[in-house]
Length: 111
Image (cartoon, rainbow, N blue to C red; front, side, top):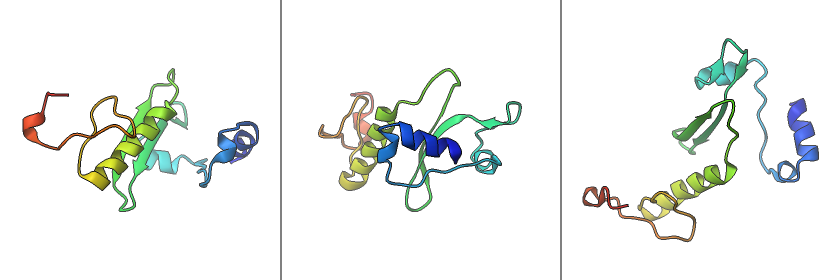
């Protein structure tokens, strides 16, 4: 929680966050999600998108050497929301405002 406090004070983007940040000092949440590294005594960097029904819709675990791509996470979230609203899927490279694709087995491999 102390790191979150400092982060939100010094980062222009973090200061705009409108939802609570989670601190997992005991590692119990990271263990429950399978992203706790027992050897290091710390969680891997991981992102989970969980829908209102409690289903994990997306997750990604990042190598220690690689930072998260927030734009990609936002794109995935937008794609999930687009699919919920339209019933369509989104192809690779899709961005909000672009058309989706019909979820049709006959379309497999065309994108």
